[in-house]
Length: 208
Image (cartoon, rainbow, N blue to C red; front, side, top):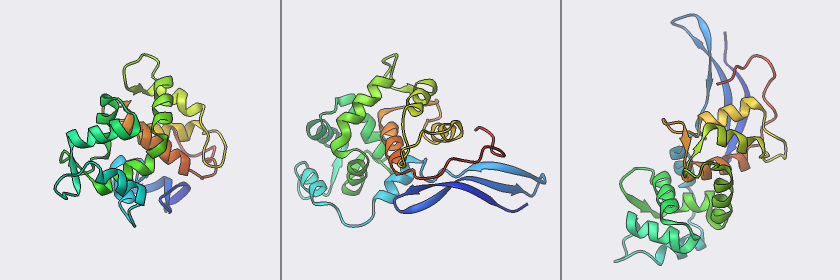
C-alpha cells in the first residue's frame, strides 16, 4: 500500500500534509499518522527564525538589551513582554517558556521575532480569548475547553473546523498533561490563521 495524503497546513509558505497513510512493513498493515510539523511549537519557532528582522521587532528588543548582548535572560525578557504587550507576569512566563526554543533560559532576537509573528499587537486579544475559554480559571485549557473554543473558530478560508481537524489541532497542541497554556494557545491561533486546507475526507480517516 502506497502513501496517501489528504489535506495540508500552509505553514510559513510550506504545505504540510495533515493525514498520511504509512505502510507498516513489520506488521503488514496501514498506520494512520498525523504529520505534526506545524503542530510542534518548537518547529513554529524554528521556521519563524528566517529572513530579515522586522524594524519594529528590532526596536522593541533593543530597548531591553545591555552591553550590546543580542539576547535577553528570562527576567529581562519577561519584563519586556509585560511592559510592551500588557501581559501579566504569569502570562509572560508562559509565552517565554513556549518561545524559548532551545530551553536555555534566554530569549534571542530570533525567538522574540517568532513571538511577535505569532502574537505581536494581538497579544491582548489572544489573552482575552484564552480567558473566555478558561471556564474554571485554572490558567490552562483542558481538552474540553479547547475543543469548545475550536468549534467556534474559523479557518483561514472562513469555514468551521470539522471534528477530525479539531482532533488534529488538539493532539498537536496539548502537552503531555493534556492541557494547553497561553503560549501554546498563541501558536494554535497562528496555525489556524494560516490553515487553508479543504475539509478532510469523510471516510477512511479515524479520529486521533
